[in-house]
Length: 102
Length: 500
Image 1 (cartoon, chains in turn blue, red):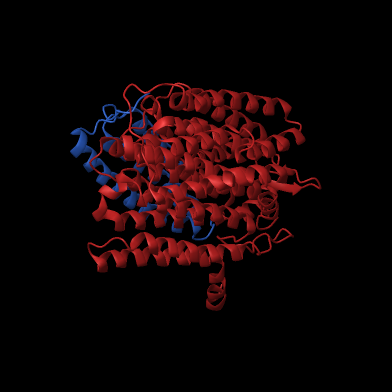
Image 2: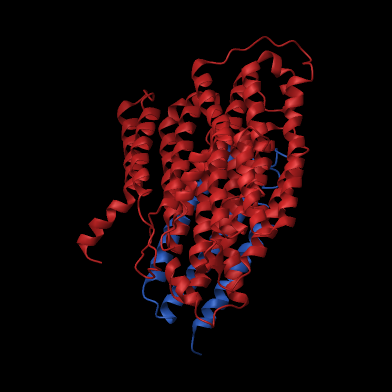
């Protein structure tokens, strides 16, 4: 079997859908953050695959590198915030962290 | 691109360079001075003033008249961007002064170095957002702005509200920017480029369109819509605005929104424009019906913001919903898709910055004094704090848009643009929304002036610094309400986007 652009796009779309699904359904904040990471990686697969099969030059791969760095930065900040949340609320369940409501 | 032209092009990002230098300066000063943090705000203000000189220089940059496709890289420097950068700089200076008198920020004294560093991180992100002409840079600058503001939203670590705000902000923000990135990747796959000007020439080709393209554009709009808190993407706004320290709330509601709008306008105008006709209307390419889409979003945004604000009891939350409603009005200015609508947006933003910052400033000072932001606790404040109550009355009346305040001029130009474009029905809906907004703004004033307090409150004096700040914010409200020609002229001269 020849692996072509379509295979990559299918994988990335499945990853994207899993990411959205995780964000919407998961109650644990860490799992929600993992959903966000899945979305970013889905986009990364797209970028690299398009750059490789579309012969668009290196733009897409450069973008993927940027996104990997940003995803790491975002994960670092998110985990720091989560640690702080755990200290103040003693839970990381997003449904319970809801003191502000009209 | 050779080395020499690289060096030459540095002159177009002078303001950004200044901001980056200030970040380094703030960090090193914080390290060297140790416990003495009193220097940091003044370094920040000095840096902002220097940056503003370079931004003012950009007003004279001529936007290229012919469509110079392909010759424009990632950054544009044009009068349009300069206008928004000035709004960001002015609001940043005011926010630094706010921070000097905010109890919340003063309590975290040992972390002031971080605070100002992160604020400058936000400013750098916003500057790049305002002037970026490439989808890669758009994503990177949005993330630069967001990552700094996630931390600032939870700056006072011990408070439950702060922590909750920053968690909600990072979850919603991360998800929406991820979705936007996926949209960008699809656009990249379809065209092979990320430059907005090149995209524009690609979209002129007849084979473009279809569901995938439409989907990608909606995904990108989701990311920008999150930043300006437009209707289906506004969920974070009330919680984050209520939870974050007031200085940061005020900052998010002005500067971050201004940068988001600048980005949205540039994205839609540069990417989808076909031609600009003689009377200043933009003929967009027939790919997506942006006009109907924007009208739909803006009506949804303003109606939702105004009606949800009706039953708010917390002042910050009320102002959060009011800022959603204002995003709706501003989107309407864009939906006109004409130069006149753009002028209306610029005028609206300049005035909105002063009135919203003013409202948040008074809320902050009252919270410093009575320790509460609940509207019920404002009972009888009109008697114990006459000047503060008078100021917030002016700001709220201006937010409603009643003459002789500047808010009226802002709304007036918006409605003129709408009526000129024969969007009468939309104008009527916006007008009805303004009437609804009157109710919740006036409710606050009623509590302050007409309801007697349950317990007698001693008269409170405003500190001289806060008094001076209030005067600085009050003067433009009255000045632009009566003598608005200079502002209008400035707006008219800064609608030039690079390339058009």
